Length: 226
Image (cartoon, rainbow, N blue to C red):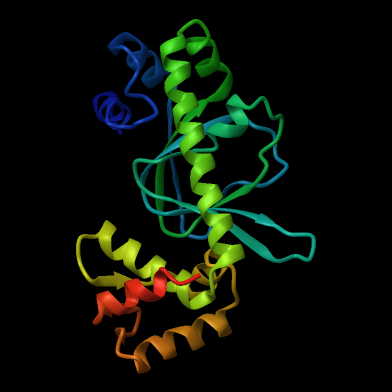
């Protein structure tokens, strides 16, 4: 990926849009393009923090392993998202979670030390980063509320509606059932039963991994149930 394309990706990212042009050029100079296969790990929980990342293409799963060995999915990283920024700017020495490529991935790695030196005397940039951290905390708060207060059916309904809205349509391509179950805080068997109920109720139609929303109004009513 050439420097102009790197620059364009950084310029359109929320995390970097507060940077002046000369600072963006400085980030391009330190940035490293990396590519991964599906199933590769970008970093593991406990490894030293060396960089944070901007996802260019593909899908990345951030997750932790619980004491019982159960995988807990924290969030899915979409193209255009920055991830692993919190441990860098939170002063952590080691990554607090792991990152797994669910698809072939292209990303831009930003060395932690060099970037922190660049922005150290730029309070406007640091304030923009603080706003991003606040939004991430709100997202995690909403996730915890869903897991603690809502049924699996309600969580699945909310996921299907949100994913449909993101793609501006009613068709959804499902990820692996194990991954989706982890995101929704359940197990694949329970998730399969929820999908079966949704089909029987006429809320959705399924063709392999493609889900078509049939009854958005009742799916929304289910999503709003506590």
